[in-house]
Every structure is written in C-alpha cells, then in structure tokens.
Length: 240
Image 1: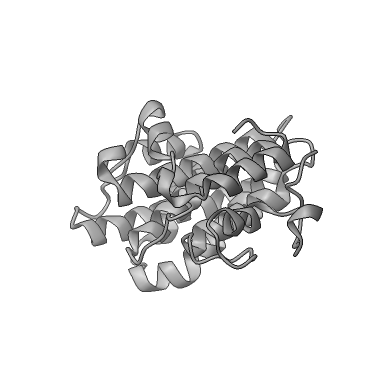
Image 2: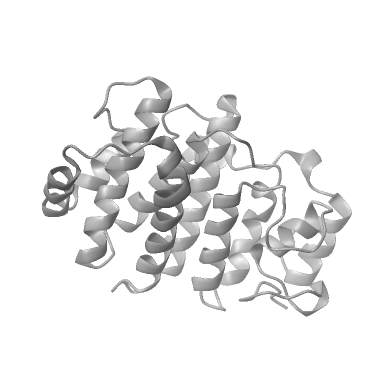
C-alpha cells in the first residue's frame, strides 16, 4: 500500500511524508526536518510531496535515498535549488508568476556568478532556454532588475525560499493536463544539481546532462540503512 502521504505523521506504520521517510532511512529521529538534508532542499521536497496527487505520490519515494547526506554550508546550494525551481515553473505558471520566476532566475544567476567569480550577466544555458520561452516576462524582469543588487546572504535568506514556494504552488495550479510529472522532475533535477555541486565527479559545476543528472542524483549507498530501505520498499510497494 502506498505510504507517502500529505502532512505530518509520527508513526511510520500509518503513513509518512517524503522527508519523514528520509529521516527514518537515515536512522535519525522521526522528523520532516532531518539534519541529513539541506534545509531548502528538504523544504522543496515537502512542498512537492504535499502538492502531488495521492495517486502519483508513491513515485516520489524512489527519490528519497537521494536526499540523504545531501547537505552542506555552500551558499550556492540555495541558489541552485531556487534556480532549478524557477526554471521548471517559468514556462507553465500563470503570467503574474512568470514575472516573479523570471526575476528569480536572473537574481539566482547573479548570485551564483558573484559566488563563482563569473562576469555579471553570465547565464547557464538552461536559464537562457527557459527565459527564451517567455520573452515578455524576460524583458520585464531585466527592466525590473536594473540597478537592483541582490546579495548572496539576502537571496539565501529570503528570495530562495520564496522562489521555491511560488514555483511549486504555481506548477501545481498551472493549466496543464498533469502537473505531477513536472513536480517530480523539478525535485529530481534539484537533487541532481545539488549532487553535482557537492560531488563534481558526478556532474559539472555549471549543469548536467540528462544522463549525468540521473547519475548525480544517486545516493551514496552508505548513507542509507539497507534494512530500513528494504522495510520502506515493503511498506510502499517499491522494488528494493
């Protein structure tokens, strides 16, 4: 029976959300805010879990091991997660949210360029492609951002979590036939981007291909208690 569900549950036999299962697999105290996962990535996972339909939520369980041990103090992690969220949302969300997502992409890219010592205005190809799909919103975002300086600290504290929330809610409410795959892909891509930053050999510093992203998202086997993972697979109906 599917065990991933909305909201908070304290008993693994009665259901659990994404991050609670992660805490269980990592051998931590039962919590949806485990220390084994970067706080903003954990927040993204909770939002995706809660905005995914009951029928599609079990597919998220396959990603749970990937977030265990995926944490660190590198400020680029927050910018990467926000950037990934904004790029995923930009093409499908309502117009007013497109404006916010376009601004978020430019702001996250600005922060990453500053942190990585790259020229201001240097954009990742994936960001260029996303912005090209909404030229009106992109022009507005460039105009809005003129003369506005975004500090890495401010972006990390305020803009990044706001971007993640707006992106997930925007995708869930978008006029698309099925937002569930978009939400899952967003989470998977954010996980892959974070792994590529923490483990460069698994990806690249500026982006990943589809193949390398899948490899980058694979968890380190030692991070997961095998017995707990087997038990979780049994409870959720997944293949171990």
